[in-house]
Image (cartoon, rainbow, N blue to C red; front, side, top):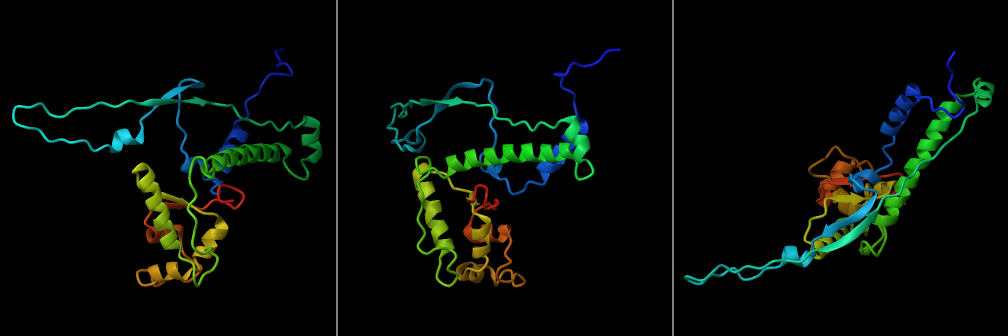
Length: 231
């Protein structure tokens, strides 16, 4: 009767379904939210870059009677991209699967390990880009945010928002903080004083990210695990 060769790939829909459930539970991985996926048609290529001065230039628009309207054009630059494939395999021998099944499902554990490795690798690559001083200039805080009585996180974030706006003309809408920093902010006097009157039922140390976002004047706050983007 027909039989597959030893190298034939056999689809495992039950493992695929488990992998999708595992992905849905990985709320600590926020890299894709910070840098959403952008689909391209080719593995590598060039793309146009519109200089900031071309968008923010303010030329004269005054027109004299019977004269033409002022006009101008702009030049754009180009940059390149190069997509790299990433993946990971976790082999499980049928003999080992049967040997250990009284303890755990080796295939399920292997799937979760492999998927976790891929996700952590992706998270690290995104973090390396976001927290790279050549891409984004760090904005120093006046007092570390774990000093509840004297830190000024709202003022620090305001200064950071202004610096980004002055650099590119766009309003930043997302703040990424580590879980440890998230806990510290829940105790910060400046934060508690900002929200305690509009949200009297919120206790110190128990402030949701949505309330922190309102206090900071941003649309959302991403709180990855300390092993992820918020390292």
